[in-house]
Length: 217
Ligand code: SAH
Image 1 (cartoon, rainbow, N blue to C red):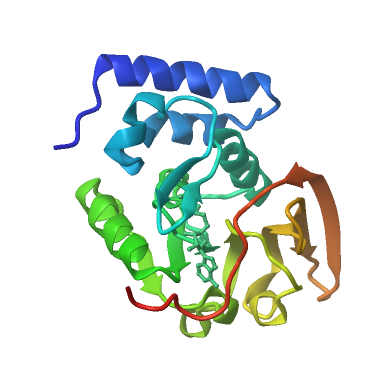
Image 2: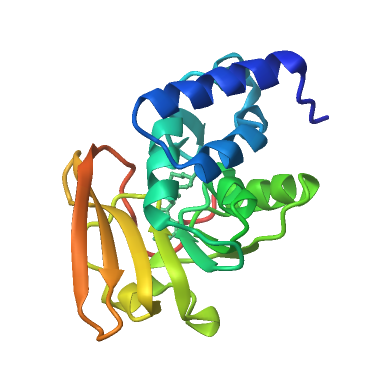
């Protein structure tokens, strides 16, 4: 049973105000985060803490991103309704729901089958209609390319040429980039002439992007 009580709504409003005061000023992003009940995406052990500004385990040794990080990545993407957005790392499905609330047509890839299945069930139940794929994000989704926006929610160890090729001219790719424990948040914009410009947005610590589908357990 999914229940979004007054208490949950109140806690969520406070959390959204907190990330606003941390520098996320895009009203559309804050509204979208206010609209998505984050507690639906956490296992019961963490329910109490759904509205703390923290990352939590979501199974398979993976984590749901910090709300601040979701706010920042969503802002950097500058999404307009109707845009095609590719997300690498569906995880719990929370970021995917926020992108759907922003009006994007979302495509999301996850390499852990149990996470793929759980997020699919939950997002369907919530009435969102993303295209969810179980596979290796390094390959992207060539059949649905090109995308207006591409978002990595896992740390990217090397510049993904295959993915850059799936980005539209004028498109934006956002990723935490780097091999170690700490990555730099990068927004890469493809100019109409095919050249790229990069901006940096602080240090983060994401779970690493791993190749291929995870082995079945
Ligand atoms: N966006 C998620 C965050 C999940 S953490 C959320 O809102 O909950 C990052 C996710 O990336 C993990 O679920 C991990 O399994 C996934 N991942 C790692 N490498 C991947 C790859 N090569 N392809 C697809 N997903 C990958």
